[in-house]
Image 1 (cartoon, rainbow, N blue to C red):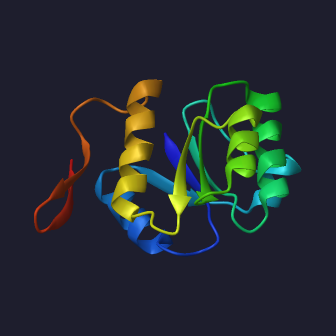
Image 2 (image 1 turned 135 degrees about the horizontal axis):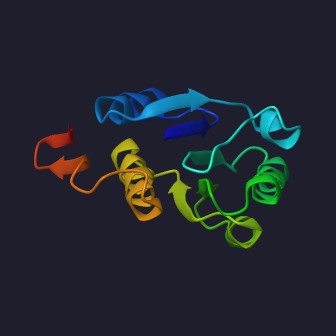
Image 3 (image 1 turned 135 degrees about the vertical axis):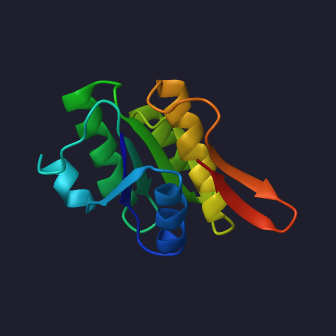
Length: 140
């Protein structure tokens, strides 16, 4: 399993660090790579797509992944808080989960990715990101 990040900035480095500490491979791809077929996505992968800057392109990406791969890869979208129309369009196109920005925390996004990975059966139970009183950590 790998997590494919297609983000426009923010907490990318912190998220990469948390996932890698948990033993999860992380790759970066641009949205156009998915649409034209160069962005290979495997059934056990999880894609984190940023809908904030280019929502039409990202929704087309979701449709393209679903058309080529069915419902194998997991897709989590990042949307603007309160952007109900785009959020519903992304879920209707085939996204599995979402998180809102601003206000998203790398720990919560990593936890969403790990939770989806467990539901998909590509990550074992009992490993992941956890919150403590003094911050966050990764349980190997």
